[in-house]
Image (cartoon, rainbow, N blue to C red; front, top):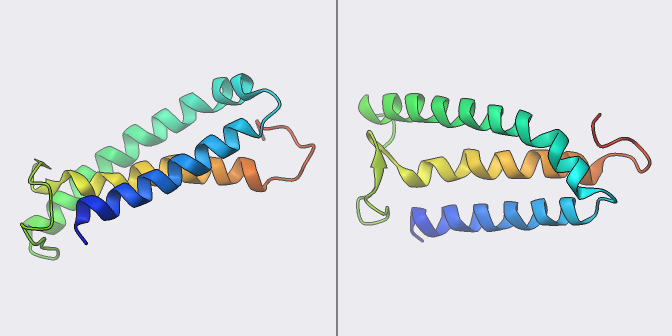
Length: 109
């Protein structure tokens, strides 16, 4: 399996959980209005950290990728597929928080 396909699997699963979490809310707009800024800030931070540390790890030889299993697109030394996992986490973790919280509690807590 290619890294690209594996990354897409993680992104699709996370997107399905996100859509389920939003659809389950009585007021999806209120949830999105409240959560978009913290998730966006976390997203910028996680993507920046991924770019820095993945490039360092690849640069010093801790990680190597089979060139036939990646798309060929990269940010520095890091293949773009490496960024799918933090993006999936950014979708999945807040969604699970919403789905698994106790009924009747406010979505903002």
